Figure 1 (tube, rainbow, N blue to C red):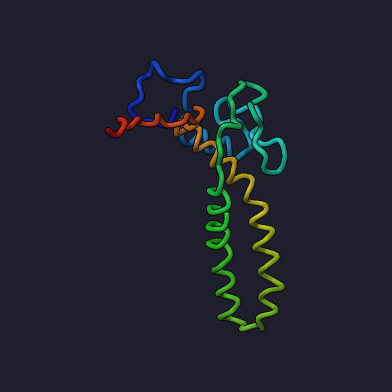
Figure 2: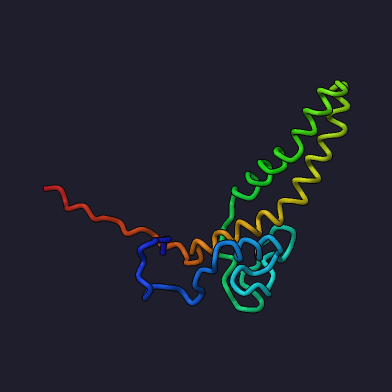
Length: 145
């Protein structure tokens, strides 16, 4: 079932959507957005099929490309002011910039990706994306005469 803001309450799942900010905060800390006890990740970025505590099917929440996008966006906003300040103040050679900033960008992105993905999973759970996708109904055309 696709998400619908006007869906009747009779069609709700066993896991009602949690409040937005608690769900995002729990996901950020690698906790189940629904109960706050179980873990979101089984590995570095692999989402568990279901919460070990409450049984919420977290594996249905597909974050896809949102976490890398948000991670790159945040990392750029954190480190680019330093890049520009160093360039303006010291004007080092380009290879020095590469030796300093590329490892910093890489390490910060790797450190931020997992919490950001957890937050996106929490965000998606708060929006009610837990229901499985169903195929859309195909409209039948009348036969041509």
